[in-house]
Length: 249
Image (cartoon, rainbow, N blue to C red):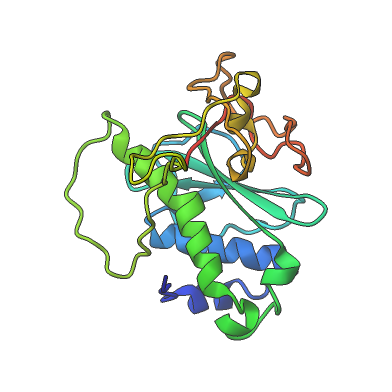
């Protein structure tokens, strides 16, 4: 799948003095792709309160990489708040994109040492696999949230012209029954003892049987995403997914 990088070079040049490590370069890549998808930045942190006169910008805020855990706030074209969180474990950095309204979360992870080969220079010098990186961000993190938005009956319908420069992601595919030749697809059976795992473990759907998903936060948490929540999955850092989050794909 081809990937259009128009504008990425300018974003990298603009942020080049702030890029100090491989993870920073990936954040700039993700930020550029979010802006390309009509998400605008409104600041740092995890506060879910959005003032009416908040400034929306395509530029990363000062100090965006001054803390160990990335937390950057965005508004989409409908005014919905999303929070991009980046957390590092021993090898990978995991990026979660959380819709604050209902805690829907989509995720993508990278081994930054393998994906980023230089902190400056041409796009293909910095990211030799830039097409794969871009497609993974778009299809695993951004498009799932856009699909969920399109299902939201409260969102006003608007006609959107197709963007020929935007990556087209295939819809999520159910698993085909190997015993049924030419028959319909069916989802895998859920493990009754694994219920809720898909909400809390962004890697849960990569193998094994799925668990059911929580549709809402039973504790009604408000105000900010809890950065100290743990995860049952192996190798994932504390705070990778907020409690009550629902994985979208």
